[in-house]
Amino acid sequence: PFRKDFPISGHVEMRYDPEQQRVIYQPVTIEPREVTPRIVREATYGDVDNA
Image (cartoon, rainbow, N blue to C red; front, top):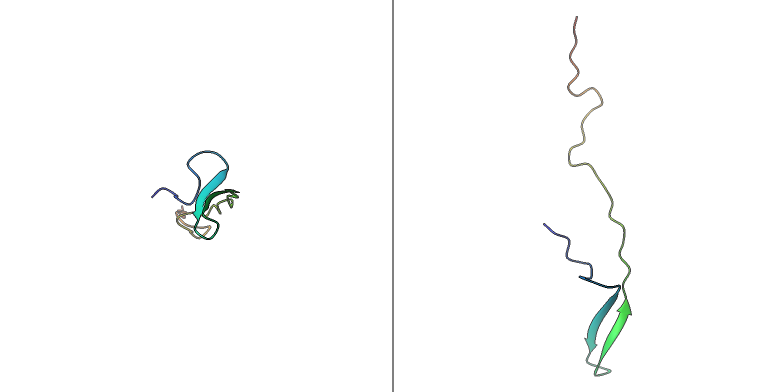
């Protein structure tokens, strides 16, 4: 699935504030993604003993 918690374009977020009754532009900060492997295997996985 695609990550959808980031702005489509630009570096600002636009939203309507009902209390102020106007559109507000706020800078967007995107947290860096943590890269994790899909499968964590033992270091000896797949080793063949040729004895």
